[in-house]
Structure formats: structure tokens, C-alpha cells
Image (cartoon, rainbow, N blue to C red; front, side, top):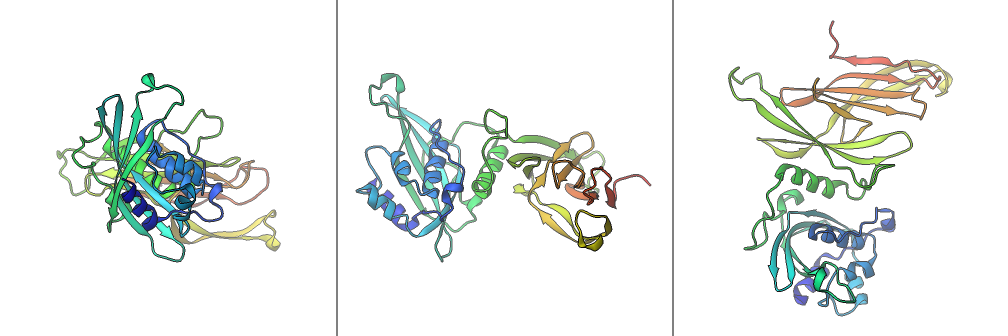
Length: 346
């Protein structure tokens, strides 16, 4: 076991950049997947003593200094974790956790690894002092060439697959964790903990489908990302029978706004759309299942007198931008200008 983990450390190394401790702190041993996520959170934050503590008596290196030295070359590690399989044995439960990892080194190309971690929980009811929480026993990972989200093993060896559940939702969670663990996360202000993603199922037919053909289904997942003083960011994923689970991007107008005398606090001389971009996050957004639209409302300051709002309509299996309004005047009044409208009736 030690040899395999030592090779992993030497091959991957996982030190984070100087701003590593700006990343959200995660220390969760409530289940095996959370344990592995916490381990790499510690590595990415360069908290090597904490990372070391997630192992049991069999450590991945001879000393903590050797362990930390093995992580000297890599900027960060992105992680995707699958459903753990559990097996009981003589007063303990062993968990086998599928993982895929992308390690990015200083000045080098990212390296991908996939395989399994093994964790052990000694029955808390039979333990004495000192108490031993869930800990890592072993790791077995090999180089992989697939994209990170596709490299995750379906299960670990001959261990039974994890409990049946919402595979699409778990896939979306894994993709969100892999892409946004460093920029999103944490609990919304005023809440007791992380917010579960919103899930909607949308029935539809393509124009080429027969009228009596069964409805197709697309599932929409909305994830809370982060919040500021007056705006909240969301990331969306979709699942369908053709493409599986993938991240959604939304068309967004690029604006040219001209203020009188170049004073942004003054009147607007002109405002026009000069192009479009694709955004992976929406501000203060929501999905309306009755009208099949995603809406967003981005305040430019707390008063809301300067803001931009958009409407994306679901049709033909896609979300299309159909309405966009902008209030570019910081005048204390809400008076948006309609810049794009394919939604309202003539």
C-alpha cells in the first residue's frame, strides 16, 4: 500500500499556488467521498499536516516532510468522486471510492489519473480513546487519457456498485465539483449549510417528432455558486438521452454604452448590442416551469436602478435568448430599455 501511494505522490504532486488558502476550507469525514474531497482540499490549500491526518497508520511517505516535498511541483488538483461501495468486516466498514484526478504542474501540461481509494471506519461504538474517525487506507490510481469527467470508473474492482440513486444528479454534482470547486462553494448567506441543486424535468418534442410520439425529457440542474452583497451566481447543467449530462452556457449580449461627456453617472447617449458571448454563470436567476424560461436579473448596484435582465426560452430542446433589457442610468429610478425581444407578442 505504501509503495502505491508513494508513487502517486511522486507522480502527481499537488501543491497549490500562492493564493491557495483563499479557497474554501473543507474538512468533512461524514462519508468516504467527502473524506477524499477534504484530502485534496487540504493538498490544494498546502495544508499538508491536515492532508497527512486523513491517513491511518500506514502513511503515504516516511515522514510528513517527505510527504509535503512530494507536492512541490503541482499548482492544483481537480477531483471527480463517484459513489462509494461499502463492505463490512470484523468491526469495521471499508469503502471503495472511484475517483478521477487532474493534476496541473508548474509550467507543465495537466496529468490525468483514475482509480480507487479505500477508506475504513472502525465501529464508533466499540472504540475507546483516542477516537479514530474515518480514514484513508490505500489508493490505487493509474494514468488516464480521457477527459476528467469521462475517466471516473463506474465502480472499484469487484466491489458492489454504490447504492442506487439519481445517477444524472450525481454526475452533474461531480462535474460541478470538478469545474467550480475553487471558484464556487460554501453556503448561501443566512443558511445553515450548502444548498442542494434545484432539479426540473422538462417534457418536449422536436418539430420532426410525430405528434403521437412519446415526449422526450430533459432535466435541468441549477447549482448555487456564490453570492455578493446583492447578487447571487448560479451554474446550470442539463441531462438528456443524447448527450447525457453537460454544462449549459447562455447567450449574452455584448453592449456598447455611451454616456454623455463620458460620465457613467450621467445620461445615456446611446446603447446598442455589438455582439454576443456565451456565459457559464447567470446572476439572480431562476427557472419558471410554467413558461419554460430561465430568467436572470443582474444588479449593477444595490439600489437596482442600474441593471440588466434576460429571458431564455426552452424550445426545440435548447434555451434561446429571447428578451434582454438594460437600465444603464444610475438615476435612482428603474427604467430599463428593451434591447432585444423575440418573446413578446406583436
